[in-house]
Amino acid sequence: MSPETTPELQTTTGADAIDEAIAKGIDFDGSPIPAEKLDLYNQVMALEAGRQRSGVSNTMRSRIVRIGAKHIPQEELNQKLIDAGFAPLKDKEIAFFYSGK
Image (cartoon, rainbow, N blue to C red; front, side):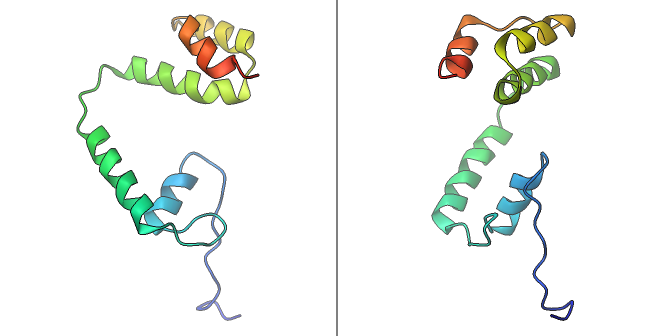
């Protein structure tokens, strides 16, 4: 294939991979994302963009818990939060993120 016809390789790793795929309207398997799904996603993201924020530290902690729970065992994540000066895991976070593990 010539460079003009070679499809652009899409990465499926990293924090921006999903955002890049959404912006292109193409799923990782190369299939188009249905317009209805993109429209709803964009509507909800527009609402989120207009929401008043409570603070950077709170958002950082929320992201750490939400993403960290996928990769780090509960006790280890809890200790890491404490060591970094964040509040420890709350009972409702433990129930939500760790109850099925």
